[in-house]
Every structure is written in structure tokens, then in C-alpha cells.
Length: 148
Image (cartoon, one colour):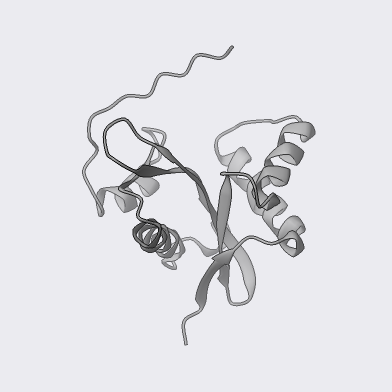
């Protein structure tokens, strides 16, 4: 029996998700206002929101998440899936949880008829990049973000 199971996030996951979310923010040295985290949580559990989360349970505990959304594309006839945030708790990294979350999103995207799955990461995040490079080479695009 696999030690990893992937499922949709539920209201009951609030506390455990919050712990991994804070780990994720600390890794990227980001300090978000509590209102932003509350709004993110509200979106994640709102059935009408396009922002969704799949979570990984490892030995019965929430160990990671993949926050994603689908959207129309101008480059294909259908939708794409954007993986915005992927995090695996530091205590259980190296157990295949990140790969299981990506594989799950690939299956989900195919089942929904979405055409592409894409994501970004920090250029210095060597561990994540090694995982991502095992799926596909970087397409060379550089992200620009203008705060408004």
C-alpha cells in the first residue's frame, strides 16, 4: 500500500494546510498579511473558485499541496492548467510526494481535457528544478511581474 495518497483539499484540512503554507512562505522568505492567507484559503475551499488545491497525505498526515487553476488559452483551442504553488513539507521531502502531486495534476488535466500544464519556480530552487527537469526542459521563458 502506498504511503502517499492525493485528494482534494477540504475544510477539515485548514490547520494542516496552514502549517505547510507557512513553511512554503518561509522557504521563499515571504511574509504575507494574514488577510492574504485567509483570502487564499477562502478561494481554495470555495466550489465556485477556479483556484483549487490537491493535497498529498503521507502516512495519514497532510504533507504537501499543489495549488492550481485552469484558464482559457490563446495558444490552444481549450484550457491550460497553471500550477501556481507546489510545496512538500521539509520533514518528508525525498519521498516522491512532489512527483506524486505533479503526476496527479497531469492525470487531472488529461481527464478535464486541458491541453497543457505549466509552472514557474525560482532559478535558485535546485531541488525543485531537478524534479521539474525530469518532466520537461525549461522552455526558456522568463517571468516578469509588475506589482500594481
